[in-house]
Image 1 (cartoon, rainbow, N blue to C red):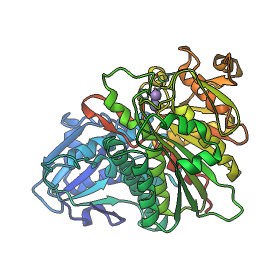
Image 2 (cartoon, rainbow, N blue to C red):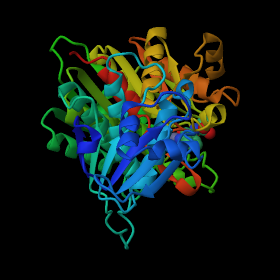
Image 3 (cartoon, protein in one colour):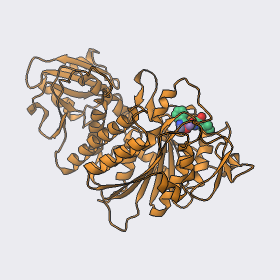
Image 4 (cartoon, rainbow, N blue to C red):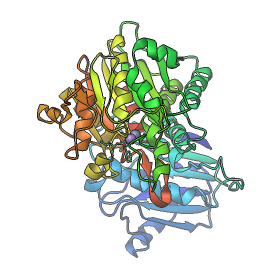
Length: 497
Ligand code: BES
Ligand code: MN
Ligand code: ZN
């Protein structure tokens, strides 16, 4: 797909389809007014007669017989006061759905001048162009690698987005959006790849490929021997029931000053979670191939960073293992010494995510991080608490928690904070070791986060439980690419100018 930004008046741009925004009531954006004039009042008539209501995310497409556009697509953008970034994105998704497999080869998009709640006078157009770029890339995604019959090529090949200026600031914002969409799609490819291919060594190879394609990324892969030497015994304990060996993946990007402390990303990379000896029920177990969703979001985010090169230092690590129940597997009751020296009684081998993450959290201390964010499909309880709308955030630092929430809000990739109060910690008391790896049924997501917090005491840390947001079940089964937009927004907000 060829994406461009243009600051020409829309009536000077020829296209097979013009997309305009129609608010439910109130003032129109300038591009809609211009199009209406060029079309002799057509949009006004459609609205007045109720053919186009302007209700958010509704669409009406029709042929035009004149120049410069062969078709018109009217996208409802709702009431001004309801147009949150999330609702604006719904309108963009509706647009993408109409154009992606339609008859137009070249589409001109005029939605960049539609105001969104929270917009200020400056800079907001950049944010909207970024969201347009991201949403288009991401909505055009298809995963057909394992289909013998490939879908036919799309007619659509070129998108022009109208903007008030095509100068550096707008271009950078638009390109960041496009890169974020591609990063999400990379994350989705990784998540959708079947677990007989996507195992820890393969995941490590994907990181190496990324580093090979971009000079600014360095990778290092630790094998079992090196992990043993570092004392990463809990990662090894999770991987020991599988014939696929675990890996610890380290990526570094240094775009900031040498003295800038790095922001650290940590990903849960369980390439398949059977539960181990605490075996999961069979139904829906295939979905546990997405249990590397946290690590996939880390790789997708690193791709965005590599493509856009912000002035920031970033370290990303992935704890990759396959949780299987063979004769060498960890048993319920086993006690393991973590890299931090704290001992853990593994009462349930299905609570393996926290076991691989705890050693990763200990490992990253050496970077003296500005912040550490870990991403993990950690608990089914998180889906019960928040469903599929929001990722759960836990943090030992209120300011960091608020930054993560704000990044999610701006990016339309929302998160919601849950408490990490000390009162929950006692659910992890063990009779035999420093702690046990499960805290019983009440507050399952919180006790999982409490477990992690014991390994993240030395830095500002936030944990994102993405069990409900990283993939869709049911008919649209597949990886979503979340929380790449949140992570990119968070990191960009910390990059130097
Ligand atoms: N990967 C799962 C969590 C999960 C479940 C993610 C369903 C997405 C959908 C995790 O490893 C797990 O099995 N957690 C257990 C923890 C329990 C044993 C304390 C869970 O949530 O049941
Ligand atoms: Mn599990
Ligand atoms: Zn898991």
